[in-house]
Amino acid sequence: GGTRGVATLYDCILVGNHATNGVGYGGGAALAQLERCFVLGNSAKKGGGVFGGYVFHPINGPVAAGATTYRCVVAGNSASIAGGGIYGNGEHRFGIFTNNSALDGGAFSYGGEFDFILLGPTFDTCQFSGNLATNRGGAVFGYCDLHASTIAGNSANEGGGIRGTTDSYGNYPNVGASIIYHNSAPAYPNCDTNVFIGNCCTAPMPAHGYNNITSEPAFADVAAGDFRLISN
View 1 (cartoon, rainbow, N blue to C red):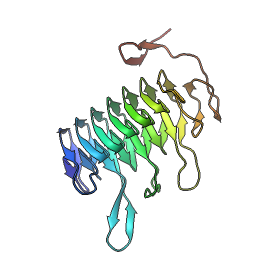
View 2: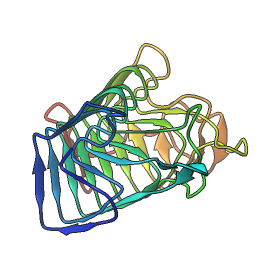
View 3: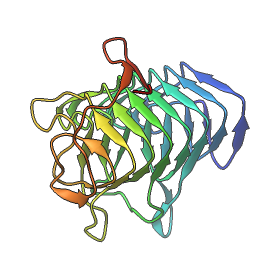
């Protein structure tokens, strides 16, 4: 794709790159640290925008790796398998993930037969909107920890907002202090039952969690996709 390896990019635009040959991971960037970057319109098999899953060591086999993003916009990327915006391990803070698409995990995906969930993918203070999964997890599919974020206006066949899977130790994805609302899917419009949710706003009341509310959040303009909160 655009860049691969242990590199740090500042204030860059990664646009229109493709990773389709070989493993085909990381259309925009793979195993890199991105700060204040735009990752736009890239494509791959996994991680259309960014890949941070694992690297394959010729002797030791798959080894945990990771990608990080800070104040980045990841938009309009696509993956033919999973993780339209981002796939794999890593830490992501103050990000906007919008209009990405994939079979599983329109914006983000991690968790599968060859995935080693060691670093624990995390999202803090991020917004997911307008993402699409033709199968599972309009915004998020798989395992991650997500905090102080908004997941709204995403769609899938199952789990319009989040479709969870357990990590290597059987733990559910953790979502805290977040809003998961106005997503759409024939099954589990906002999130499925494989998610642990605390101090969040979502509907219906989650199967696993505590201190949640189901009241509709006061978004600025749902029809226009403006999911900023306004004062009452």
